[in-house]
Length: 414
Ligand SMILES: Nc1ncnc2c1ncn2[C@@H]1O[C@H](COP(=O)(O)OP(=O)(O)O)[C@@H](O)[C@H]1O
Ligand SMILES: [Mg+2]
Image 1 (cartoon, rainbow, N blue to C red):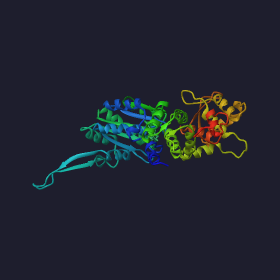
Image 2: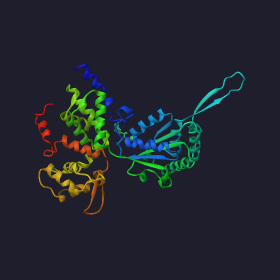
Image 3: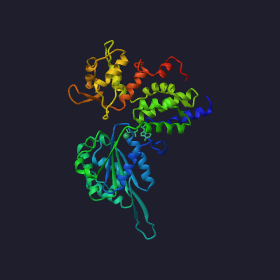
Image 4: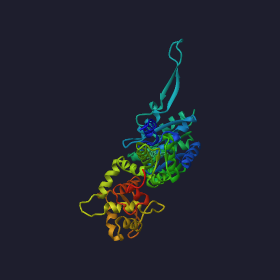
């Protein structure tokens, strides 16, 4: 293996980072609309921001890159990752620890020079704080420079009363026109789900939903990663990764990483669909453990000839409506292809029902009414996992493309 390939292999983990949010503007892809909305909202006094969406869509990465920009523009940024045990006071203690207050002290004695003191604001917070304590401290800090407080993983705070007090704090900051912006980030379908007492602060909140990435944004992740590495993804490889990632940047990083790895190990600087195929297997190994466990629980059965895996795969391949849901009708065709015979809804209705129950997950949430049920995958990471497992386990015998058949029969030049 030549030295340039070895150097590239060593840079892989800088180019693709499935395990960590992006921290560096050079690797940050797309998201211009959301970034613009954050900057507009924080520029206006009295407004605060809620950024919400599915797990793994890139909320923390967006906040990281936005925070850097704020700091470069001289603003004070305090960042907190909330956890299950947090209370109102502990959240603000963490945030205010990152903001310092400068003062001067002249010691007794004529000849002694005065000392500069830098104290974290958290030192001024009472043992049990209330919204007004926080408002006053932030007001003092924001006199010099605008302050941004990022509260990430807000959905993890369990104590409802603490969450309500945080809403009260936002209201107080807004009412007093304090030059500080709170940016709340969390996993949720809506602001109502994320923020306790949101009605009282609705007018002060700018809501930014974080959608899945577009195909273009996923392509940018591959472009940026391949630039760092000095390799190329050919068109087929790009299309395959875009299709499999389903708008989830985590999956794009994982496949980007493992397919480049496969290509480089084979001495190639061009990643083609064959290397993506090899990358899929390695990606499945590195998938979140919880999803692997859920897949096993959803598809386990002692009955020979059971079709849980096949039905789940057909659901993952079914066409989605604009809300990300599928209907049993949409499952019929992919399942007929997978099983290579005509299938009726009655053949898999029980399976769909079982996937909505705790014993097998639940993998789906069900919406609508009898005979008009619509289903949605609970986790955004399950659907791509199921599709890739389908490839690797050879379940998609007839659903595969000509290229894949050639690949399997060894005709495609890797
Ligand atoms: N804009 C982006 N450009 C490139 N990679 C991204 C982007 N947003 C997210 N990612 C990648 O996607 C994965 C999940 O991102 P993260 O910010 O942790 O999501 P969330 O906070 O929504 O759970 C990480 O691997 C991260 O590197
Ligand atoms: Mg996050």
